[in-house]
Amino acid sequence: MARERTVDRARGLSVRSRLTLSYAGFLMLAGVLLLAAVWVFLLRYVPDRALIVPGSTGNPTHGVFPVRSNLLRVFAPRAAAVLVFLLVLGLVGGWLLAGRMLAPLTQITDAARKAGNGSLSHRIRIRGRQDEFRELSDAFDLMLEQLESHVAEQRRFAANASHELRTPLAISRTLLDVARKDPTRDRDELIARLQAVNTRAVDLTEALLLLSRGDGGNFRRESVDLSLLAEEAAETLLPLAERRRVTLDVTGGAARTSGSAELLLRMATNLVQNAVVHNLPSGGTVTVRTEAHGDTSVLRIENTGRVLPPELVPTLIEPFQRGTERVRTDEHAGVGLGLAIVHSIVRAHDGTLDLVPRPGGGLLVTVRLPGTP
Picture 1: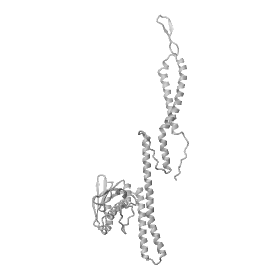
Picture 2: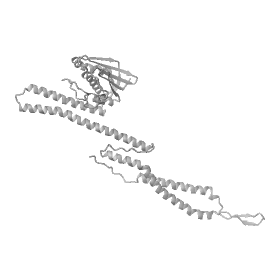
Picture 3: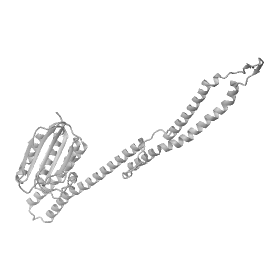
Picture 4: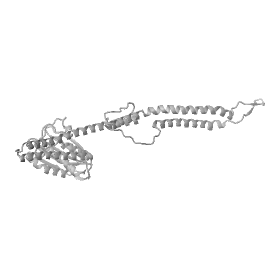
C-alpha cells in the first residue's frame, strides 16, 4: 500500500486566511478612501467659525451655518464605527466567501491524496458552470482516467509476460526431470528440445526489452530512409517467404524520417514477418511500399490471408495477442509481441499506426512518421 509522504515546510497562513485578510483589507481601504473623499471634497470647504450674514432690513443676524469642528466631532465617531463594521464584515464575509470559492480546490486535493494512495478510480466531476476550477477538475479527471488505464495495461502486460516466460521454464524443468528419471532417453533429442525452448525464452526476453526500450523513448535519433529498411527486412525474410510460397514485393521511393535505425528496422522486420506468417497456406502475396507525402513518410505493408473480423483488428497491437490463429515455424516462432513492439516504436517516433482488414482477406498496415528533407 502506498504511503503518503509529506515535506517539512514552515507553517504559514492558509490560502483561505490570506484571502479573508485580503477581502477585509480591501473593504477597509475602500472605506478610508471614501472618508478621504468626503474630507477633500466636502468638509474642508466648511468654515471653521460662524458667519454673520446681514438681514434684508440691514440688521445683522446670525445665519444657520454648520461649523467644521462641530461636524468633525459628530462625524468622527460614526466614521470609526463604520470602519469597524467594514472590518468585521470583511473578515466574516471574506472567510465564508473564500471557503465557498476554495471548495472545488479541496475536492481536487482530496482526489489527489486518494490517487497518491493508489486509488485511481475516484473522479471529482465538479458540477456547475465552466470556470478555471472546472477546467482543472476535468483535466485532473482525464489524467486519473489515463493513469488508471495505463496501470491496468501494465498489470495485464506483467501478468501475460509472467505467463509467457513461465511456460518455457516449466517445459525445461519437465524435460530435465524426465532425463534425470530416464537415463536411457535419447540425449540429442533432449538437447534439441531444450535448445528450442531456451531460444524461445531468449526471444521473448529480448522482445520484452525491446518493447520497454520503445516505450521509454531512450534512443539516439538520426536520418533514416524507410525504403532501405524495408528492402533489408524483405531480404532477411525472403527465405521464409520462399518456404511458405509467398511472393514478397517491395516498391516505392525514398521516405526519410528521424529516429533510431535499429528500432525502425525491427519495426519493418516485424511487419513483414507478420505479413508472411499470417498469409495463405501457399500462393499468397506481401506488398511493401514506401512513399513520402509532404512532411510525412509512409510505410505500407499489405498481405493476403484469412478474413479478419473488424472487432479483432484493434486488439492485435496489444501484447500477447495472436489473433484467431498463430502459424508458427521453427525459425520464427511468435511470442505475441510483434505488433505490440511495432506500435511502441511508432509511438516513440511520434507516428501513427493504422490497421485495416482487407475485404478479400489479409491486412493493410500503414505507418506514418514525421518526414525529414
